[in-house]
Image (cartoon, rainbow over all chains, first blue to last red; front, side, top):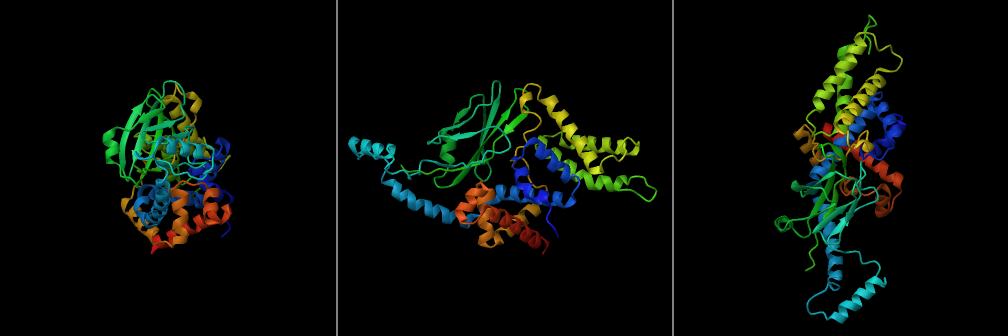
Length: 210
Length: 167
């Protein structure tokens, strides 16, 4: 069976990457092409299951990845400031890192995995801080209420704020396990409570080097 | 869509387009919005009324006609709700919406099980592309294949899952 030219747009449509005109053209097509609608519905279902149950579905791949990351963590461990390291050594390390002699050391705590198109369907840009005690995102305007969600397999914590940053309470941090993957998401609401925009869930791993 | 007497088959139209309207409404206003079902009912009733009364003259396809009604109704709903934040109109289509879940839980469980059974080649691509949210380019770079190959592999994985789900 010949492939419909709209099939290539399914992912872009689902992740909100199409322009308004393209999106409407695609949607009109869905209403006229049962095959593309079935395909889109099926893909939507697949992505929802992957997002919802991915932790267990990809357990083996994740274990493999974590093992790899532990190896780099060990290497990085030498660079972490410890009480016995003298101030001079620390200063020297800072200089080394700042001047890029070791430019490829990217293992910070925690590691946020933010790709070019990770922010989807909205106008919020997620800006991660090196330390997960604070989460920041780009402000959308005045009178906006942001709702921040932290997920493990399920929703771990949610909190509303009018600021474009939020701190994690200690009791939530205590619930988080080093090495495990979490994700966070921000939704923006108007002062009347209407959803204006939502970021995608962005993953991060809490990597305890202390 | 038409019966022998040239009138529109309303039952058939409802059966075919209600899932489409539901999909679009939920996607646009969020599956967690309790009004979604009322809006779907309203759109379908409106469309059927217009078809029955002859206001729909067949200038476009039935699909395009129902899509136009759906889109207008959603814009209207969001406009009314978002008087303050007008610049973000017409809709933000958040995806994946964490509140949206597959209605059929058993089906979701089965799909998860089948996903686990996939060959590493396909499982890895779904892991990187959908679970880790990497772009097509990044996935391609990681696996040493072309971005086009990424799409093809995802498409093939979906095809395999479809087969496995039917077994």
